[in-house]
Image (cartoon, rainbow, N blue to C red):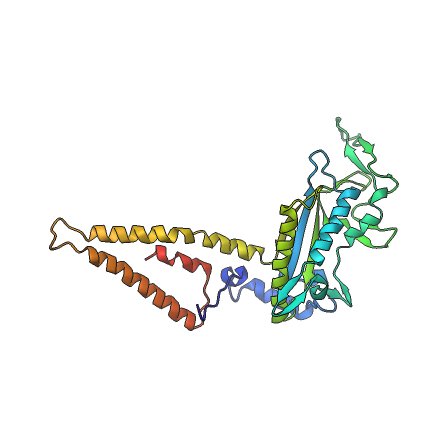
Length: 318
């Protein structure tokens, strides 16, 4: 393993080197380059980069709407956990604030969290059961959970406190909207955190941050930190790890495979005649195959050929 170069990037492994999509992406990037460190713009992203994403739903069985003050308090807690997750890389300790993608000197933020300034004034409606005709309007029974002095307008609304322009389709999922474009219910919400990836070192730091992000959110979710929300997490390397984990599922079968192969080889080389029976020949045939495979893999590693997870299937092909 001295010279092993392990490759798990799905794009590198499963897409053509000179594919049309890559050529067109190169053209786009030549005119609309992403600048993570100074003028980051989500609309210019053409590669996954390094990011962490969470999708939030309600834990409350009888109330799936997220437009509640207690939910927003836990969203702020979740945001704090993510931003304060400590990362160790190459002797350096940093958090999201030191690695975040920036516009000027400001980190990319999820401005939807600023709804906590007005969430106490937001009201929502629940659908009233009844027959709906083409000429009749859908009836709603308004149930005020907070003060009920403010409605959220879909798809865009200006926050009257912070003056943020909240583009709700970016953050809300499965939103129920009335005929007047007022938000009735929000069953799911997403938050995204981007980190710099302009250079190879930044990309490596971003990968280290992603590991810390997944660990921090996973720990909070598994240890019951949140009472009202359930959190699912995703990062740019999640697909890589899932594919790799799927490949590694064959490893526990290695020992049984070798035992079966040896047993089969020994049995097929045995005969009723003790003189002509060659059980050791069957055993040594397996040993020679293992030695040849190991030597071939070692030579390929020293020649700089990337090692991929599917190579773990080699023992099953001997």
